[in-house]
Figure 1: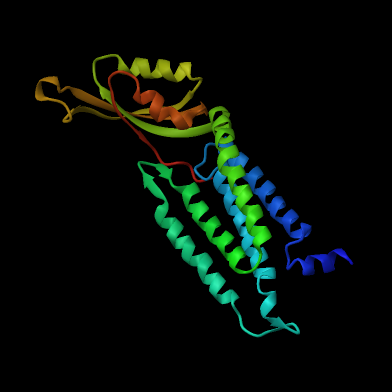
Figure 2: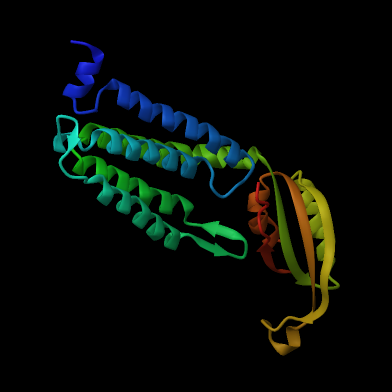
Length: 246
């Protein structure tokens, strides 16, 4: 029996299809590595999930409806329902993504929902082996890629912009610059955004003038600059700017 016949006997779930899934997983992971290294929101996990789920959806479209084919003629077209699942889950995933002060949250969760839809499609289309393979790859992504992504992010050279508000007259700017130097961050640009506003979050006797400066940082681990700079005594708040689009 030829390999082609074996694939047909398995209902489109042979080693060829599994290899295609693993190939999509590997190639999308390579793209995700580059995105993670540059500190982008859609990094290693998100890219890997989307690439693998897309391959599964395409395989479902190719092999998932063989039981309704008679002499190469379609008796009915169930793929029209599957297409609506893909677009419908896309809207659901978009609702899970939150953008707040330039920081994006929920991308991996949204991609996981889309992936779960693909797994359900494969199971319902009679491709349980492919559904199991992608489920296993999901746990490789979320359990194995999470620490790997943190490792890459800490060493990647990303550019990030922040607006830092601090109390005037306490030498806070000098402490901020020293912290950036200690973290090996290069300050690409710095500007005074406002000066002399009042700290309304404090009691009246503790109020003082506030200064807001904009910093653009480049270097390893700048994605966690909000946490690092926010811990400097006298800093009132740190707001992340928008990411560059590339």
